[in-house]
Image 1 (cartoon, one colour):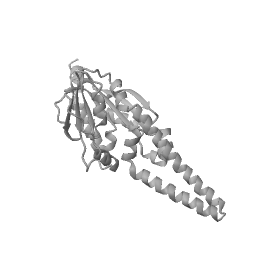
Image 2 (image 1 turned 30 degrees about the horizontal axis):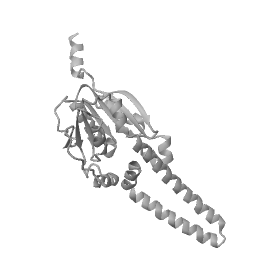
Image 3 (image 1 turned 180 degrees about the horizontal axis):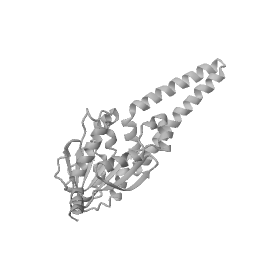
Image 4 (image 1 turned 30 degrees about the vertical axis):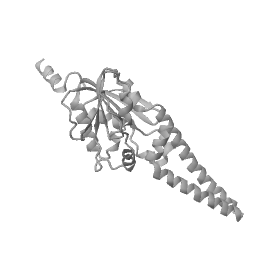
Length: 264
């Protein structure tokens, strides 16, 4: 199961810690049970059940997301055709770009890698990049490097952009906003931005516990899109873990709209 293998590899310190905690708890249960201290044994067993629960639920959701990844859904949400040219902006995991290429016939996919160890210090991301796939060359796919301050593409040059679990890899709000502004710059008038991010939800509370409180509400991403100039058009929760957004760039630039109104 690729989704589970990838998840465990990227989060291996967590699962090593859980395995060590399980071993220690089982040893403790055997020791206190041998002394007849059943209350302590039951308490240790309850902690073990909690650890088992979080492990099992995390693996189950990783399997579900692996079977139906968000980037495949974003491709459909953006009504991208197999003959279209579009851009995917990522931080170097590559699995999304490889999969999206398989959906194309004569279309072209440009993948922009924004990874920067100073701006994206997440250790899970660093481990994910250590197992980077190196697929054979494909005429439908191009890899180029960029930054949140400069995506090396001309203004208004692409009809669609996919951002899958990318903005959240930049902990600074200003970096996220600059990246959205760059996406707006290269997107053609009438173009589509497809965004997927993990958001606060019941399922994430069940999986992450109190840590889920650090996840933003969908309103956060919706407002960021508006501030960058986009018009949010569709919003869809996925597996009650992430939320997918489609936001369009106005066909007529705002400054032209204002000039037209002034002329009237």
